[in-house]
Amino acid sequence: MTATPTAAATPPAPHLAGNFAPVAEELTTHELEVTGSIPPELTGWYVRNGPNPQDAASAHWFFGDGMVHGVRLEGGRARAYRNRWVRTSTFTDGARVHDRQGNTDFTAGSANTHVVRHAGRTLALVESSFPYELDCRPGHELETLGAYDFGGRLSTAMTAHPKTCPATGELHFFGYGTAEPPHLTYHRADAKGALVVSRPVEVPGATMMHDFHLTASHVVFMDLPAVFDPETAMRPGGGLPYRWDAEYGARLGVLRRDDPYGEVRWLTVDPCYVFHALNAYDEPGDGAGRGERIVLHVVRYERLGARGATLWKWTLDLATGVAGEEQLDDQACEFPRIDDRLAGLDAGFGHVTVARTPSSGPVSGALLRYDLRTGAVARHDFGAGRAPAEAAFAPADDRPGGPGWLLSYVYDAARDASDLVVLDADDLAAPPVATVHLPQRVPFGFHGNWLADR
Image (cartoon, rainbow, N blue to C red; front, side):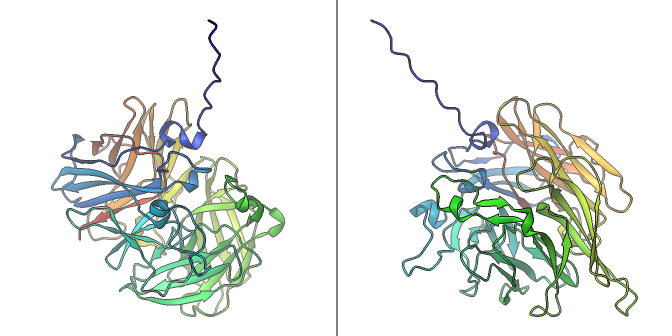
């Protein structure tokens, strides 16, 4: 009898292969193996979010169900690792766009992009919907409590990149939409968590606005030419519903924080795309409106879909209305971070991730620390077969800009698992302070934070 030939299996999409592939289990593991010594000052959770489709399928990397991965550090020990899906209404009930009244259902989303804490709440975020609150009480760590809409006051989606003002404790954020105006709304919550400002901002069309900037005196929006494409949005499995349209133009909108309902002033920049801002700060003028500038550092792509983003500096001259643009390095990088206690101030240093993360083949990577005043760059290479993710800053004491550590999940291809690596932020080239060996892979994902107990 002649055997019937079988068709070769279709390889998975790149965003579902290698360490992009989702993990199938939720684990809780205690007393993890550690190489080196965990600083006793670190007491809390390091939590990072990312896409992990529960059915192991998604049309785009950005679309998978959110899964948070957390490591508990306490008393110089790695007490636990835990990973949990964020149980959004999409996760439990399936995808939908509208509620029973026909309104946009902002509880429907993946909550797969970031984890932040504000006013005692830990929120899992994605820019297309409401945040979801996570339970961080002992014994309940990282379980989902439900959608959070600021007591019913939030009526738009919420960016995955809100900014906390270190002086006021206010949380600044925005929501963008695609269906109908307003396509952009600016929001502000006070230090206690009450939503106190929600104002529409007029823009020419619906664009993908992933991040923005906060300074001590200003909010700056990035209206860039990644334009909503309704045909792709309506097509099943159509992928990311945005297209590059250089004719739309690129501009930065400046709003004074002391006049949140006032004029937004727009300054033109060259067409480009920015997923992530590093930081921004004000340079004061002479008191008479002369010389006042805003300095912004961004990781800039030549266009949406391009490879190889690099660190750039924009300088907005508020007297002349001219935006200066300067490339600071030619090293491809992503996931810029600072000591968040200096958000909106001249932070001095910024950290970025350099990683080669193909879905098949060798991986590698490094973390860079930029001295934003002198241009000096420190580097920590992880070696062949090890690729870092975003690194969050964990402070060693109460001094903003003082000593601390960088925490990052690092994929180790040799054992097909991940580690939590702790580096001295002031001595980045030194060997890791500690490496916490995890029981499984942490798939390549997006953003997270060090959530200290105090």
